[in-house]
Image (cartoon, rainbow, N blue to C red):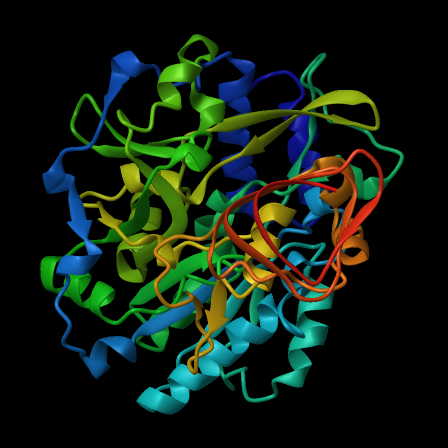
Length: 455
């Protein structure tokens, strides 16, 4: 046993953490302590072949209601949006008018239930930080919860590790001792919460899992149908990479021809330029997956209740102390399931909000909310406008609310770059490629903006 591991085990036991989660953490900690390389070099991987891929636009269009009755919609909802200055669940952030992510997701599901006459479960994987806020808010949708299933289950937590000696990190604030173990924890959390067995006992077979901040990720019946027909246990939705996606995890195959996901944290430093070559590694993970729950159960049983994914060792500073956070990525499970495939989907199924740039696009008329409460690009658009806001003045939600008194029209905008402290008033229309610049405070309103404009 590695030095300090017994201390970590005691800490986790005292916190009431499930035994299989403790075993999983212990296995990852041993990898860290042994110095086992967690990097993936170009020598070990290559781009995927076409027979590893399915294509959304080639899927059959016929609908099988019996398959739809066996789907559960799982949403990853553990994030606080701290990068945008938030301290509550990111999914509470208004994105379209007065509707926030939770409003739109809930209405999507309720509308689909009414249209198809099915009881489609919606279940959130919350973190300790988001659970209370999320469940309190969802009380406004009393019909959302199904009698025999919970509305949420909890993501697990791992103790942080001091970089200096790999001992447990002791914090002034008890909560800072722990880190969320990444969305790869969903498989373990489904099991340790009892939800996996509960769903299987009620006849559910397929789970669609996606981020709550990606409103393009909606249930599509043809996807589980092709999984059922071809016996596919795991399907990852991927998109063609653009320059904006250079740093995201990309799809590749190992020497044995098995599909794997490589995150930037797993890339050797001297290969970063190759990692970001979007012409070589063409597909990125949207973090939307389709999973055969029966196959997940089999894999867990085969490995004695533990599903070990490629480890991501994330260095951080907490209370000015260098620590490691042990994390895994949900999509990395593509390497575990025999016969797993990737599904190339249109960009319309990927509309996440990671920064305020993404938020402005959703706020604007470049996106519309249709009758099924799906966020879609407005007519004649195939991709969202490229937006770059000056982080000094637009980096947080509070700054955005102060400076966007009204949202500009971006329906016909290809790109918008804002440099300087500019407030947007009413009736601003941006067409084509727009660059707004100001040396001091400035306001723009009642005008059509095109090209370079100095204020």
